[in-house]
Length: 211
Image (cartoon, rainbow, N blue to C red; front, side):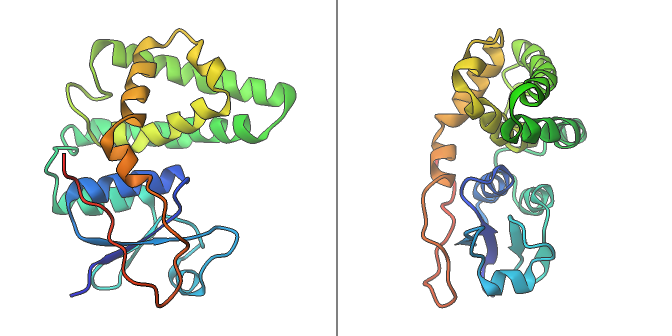
């Protein structure tokens, strides 16, 4: 049976969270890098909406949502225990996806007052995360879980809009947590650069967890 196939785009935070979970699971998975401005026709023929990430499992079934890809991988193999406290993690992820992500997008793409308003609205949620992380090392307790790995790519994206501003905020616990994620071996592994995938290319496997 051929390995699952993950269509990805290196800089997309949704694709990052999918790669993180598949890598942690240790499941053998082919990685296909998609360029958003020039998407491969084979990808578009399978993708319901032309967005990444998208996973084809070993049977050719399509999984098109990043969180569903994470759960697909971790329900098969969860050597690091990312599904501990699953209900709490999913509730926090849902809130960040539904409430924080739209504000992040407005902050990133708007200009002037609109961007400042969106930034400040998003910042109120980040202050809540800082309060949580001041009490425990991770969002759901004493270990990395699904919540940390699903949310961290979006906090990174927010911070990178104006890093000096982010670093100046009174969020020491959140900043420590984010820096730990960005400087980790796992993040470096899933951020390796790959050429645009084209039909007929040799198989590239997503690096598996070694630490």
